[in-house]
Length: 147
Image (cartoon, rainbow, N blue to C red; front, top):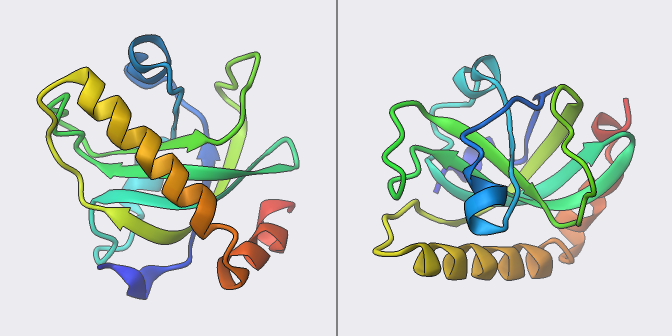
């Protein structure tokens, strides 16, 4: 599934999304702007991915969603990144760098918000575990995240 394109490196300023992640779901996401999304390789399928992200020179595990968010029926493709860390403040306008290292699952629709949250929590657990694998774990030290 789209693995030819991985690992994939991207960066951009965090923009305001729909404000749903943190407010409705308790799972805040950082949205990257359209030029970053338009530059994604065609063989990077929509779906849920995991990898590393850096913000202010700190590196965090992350889960990323690429696609249309069928549950919310978006008109525009988005790239949303959830950092596995509790932040006190928003970081709109800050430069976020990501290395997408692996694929978890396809996007799908959910019949309820509870179901969606459960799936995201499961994605986070999978990401947390897979990022410990030596081949992807060493990417957290990649120069790209610190330049």
